[in-house]
Amino acid sequence: MSSKYKLRDAEIPHFITFTIVGWLDVFTRDDYRDIVVNCLQYCIENKALNLHAWVIMTNHVHLIVSSSTNNLSGLVRDIKKYTSKKITEAVLKNKRESRREWIINMLEYAGKVNNDNKYYQFWKKYYHPIQLSNSRRLEIALNYLHNNPVKAGFVWEPWHYKYSSGIDYYTNEKGLIVIHRL
Image 1 (cartoon, rainbow, N blue to C red):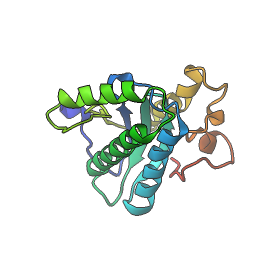
Image 2 (image 1 turned 90 degrees about the vertical axis):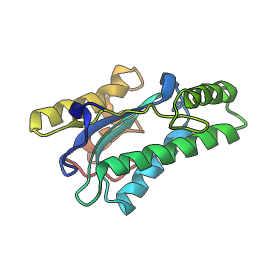
Image 3 (image 1 turned 180 degrees about the vertical axis):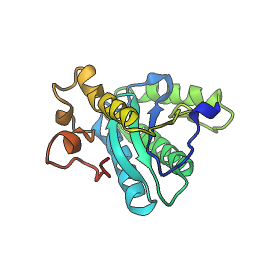
């Protein structure tokens, strides 16, 4: 991995993106998105993750994160590993998932071509963290992240998207996850 894309100072917020292999639209179902939400909430409560902003799109997740007391790259690894396993299990068990066979075949294929996996690969390997070391970079990242659902045509305004911290930044209401506002 290039030094340009390494998590450096964990206390400084980083913009990171997790992308599903093959850009599969797995996060069209709340059950799968809720696994990510619950994992992030657990890491906030138990692993010193500071979640500053987030959005779950259909095939990727954007986060702005930091940690004052923990290894941020280790946290990212744990989040990806846990969610990968749980979402794959959920797809396998979901009898109503019309795309189950196709999704599992794609995850299985990605797992076979990556020597780091035994069976399935859910997330692409890299997540390219970008350190947000000044207010301008932070503003750009927040706007990009929160406007993703608007640009995709899912909602008219960033605060209308349920699986995002947009509501926390644009209104006085609270979203699904307790965030550490910047």
